[in-house]
Image (cartoon, rainbow, N blue to C red):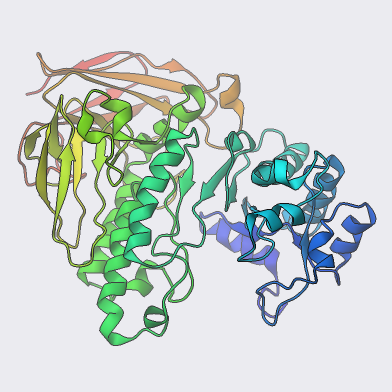
Length: 491
């Protein structure tokens, strides 16, 4: 009550500011609580954890255990408790922490499986890794029972195959604020995508902070800011873009002084993420409709190039962008391998490079190496501050010449499951390199509230230009689109 005297008013205020709010919930219970007793009376708590008199890491340490989500009744009780105390307050999403389940740190695998069981499905040793799947199911089915057409979003600290069926994404856990941890997030995320889990994220800046950063020691402040900025640059090209961690605070205005190079770069990447929403939302739609993935290992697109097979620190963000995050303190150039079989544009300068070579890419503090494949069509939206602002706003098509290209712009209502029944649109966009023409095809499909008309601006990127990365530069052409096919020629 002292911290949150009126939670409903707080949630309402967040909504008034055009934001949404997610609350952290654990499947963990203390013996002194009514929630514990309700589950215990039905035999739905793991008893070995209590019998071992284990204490958690909170304060002096308290006895606790986890409930059994493999039981339908267990899931119903757990959701009922959440519904009674939290869901009625209007929270938009669920941050389901400790879903390993995290009984106690530093236990052996054997002991962990013993403490997670027996489950309603069988021994913990058999079902241990799938705890998160059943936990997410509890929340998803609970939400669906109230409003089956309202999209559910769940963020979990562990994952399992098929987790996305329950509206869930995962983050990589409580990683440390260190350069090697930043580096490891890249290959970890790429491997999640290869495993059929397209929606993942990480704690930008690292969750667990060394004392030298937590104490804000002046001699380490520059490194702290650089680490956060480099991680932020990587995060802007991750499936989910989120900053989180222990003190120091991670807001842009807390990380660096106003007007500093670090803060300017943080703001630029934050704004760029919003400008890329038409591109990113299409990638997200493809994960459902076309079994796609947002982040792609290079081997997925360049299987005949042996040089990409062991590249764990580069990846594709959708079909267009080649991303190479900087993961070393003080680095201002960065080796980037450009896959063979195509040409690549430096996103920031427009300079063109042949594929099949490693380049020493410029990597000033303000930006990381970012390349775009020739033939790419990248839709850029208007400058917005929240996702459903200006849904009918103009879209600028950045067309990277040198190869034929295509992009199917995807849109739906962004709020319901109507897209599962066909309520969505696609606008096929094609580029013919020989003639330089861009064809914006006839709109396919419809949904309530869709933008019936909009302006498409077009920029042809063909080489070095000071405005190569300027989203607000004067377009080469502009057309008004109302759903019928339009062909646009340069000049």
